[in-house]
Length: 197
Ligand code: GLN
Image (cartoon, rainbow, N blue to C red; front, side, top):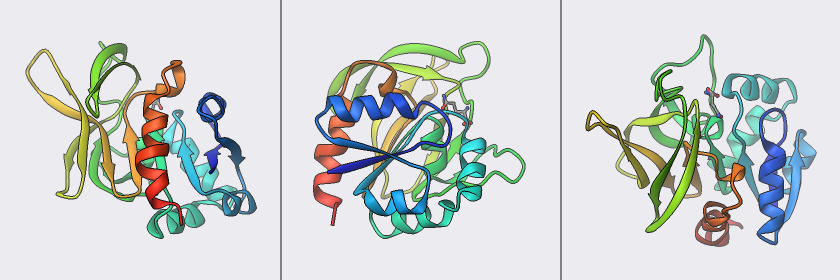
């Protein structure tokens, strides 16, 4: 499998390293010819507004949307989750997303007090240490979206932080910033293998 990482801004290098550690080919994607080469794509953590604007100016915004619609496996972490949301609860002015997952995502959702933290969470039946940095969460989701992880706050509120819909996977946290490859492996084994055409 050739796994691309959208390499316009953010922690794309860490995702490339994780892909290689998991034994797959990692390609950076900035241009449409590079997008055409890959079987699957990872949208990194970073700043979702900047990534979307750069995707427009590099001419890959619409081509990525089209590949998402046509079934290419895509995994987005943090800013990448925001970019996969059909709708944002609190978009920046004119903020665009690729969409694909039927959910409303709230950016910078955890608030200033706890804007960066680590927490043990359940992910698809496994316990892992998750790194959250000015992370989003899912405010609401459609019937076709499967929740893989939830965070429960001290006030009792509980919010999805990892979701899957068909060919798409999104996490609020950053597995690329740890040496734990389980989320990447889940993407390769549970999504890429069945969705790469
Ligand atoms: N808050 C960022 C955004 O809106 C996401 C943060 C991250 O990727 N660590 O894009």
